[in-house]
Image (tube, rainbow, N blue to C red; front, side, top):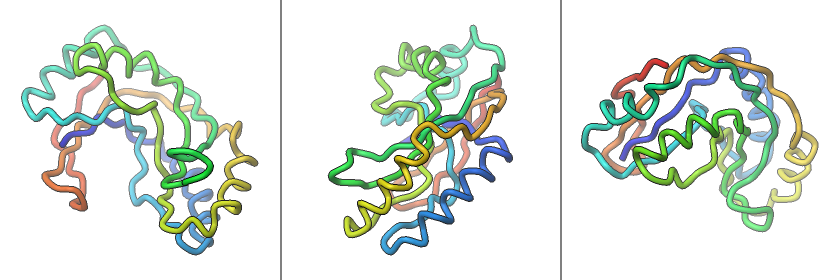
Length: 162
């Protein structure tokens, strides 16, 4: 499996880490080790780098505002907490033209929830920060990450520069 992702800028990562620290104080919540802004999950294994270069050929580096938080899949059953990156939608749409629907909105998961017992505490944090600005960052490239099996770490396979 492959994912197409953008690395968070250090100042954005620092702000996400602060929120992670508050969330992992709750029982049953664990931090995501390397939050990245996910653009697409791909099952297909062939010619990913060449196809990605084709999909983003018309893009140059650009700035985005990282803003907002939410939960997945919904408030009643929380599996993860994410930070929004709606400014990546145009880039994600271009990638979708080449690879098909990405199946996700641009986001960065910052915490995984192992227990529903802390749902109200998580929702309280998320509601306080649902419109919070984490800052702006420049998008200059996309990482292609791969892993063979679930549970294994993601490994960077290639990088596409915008």
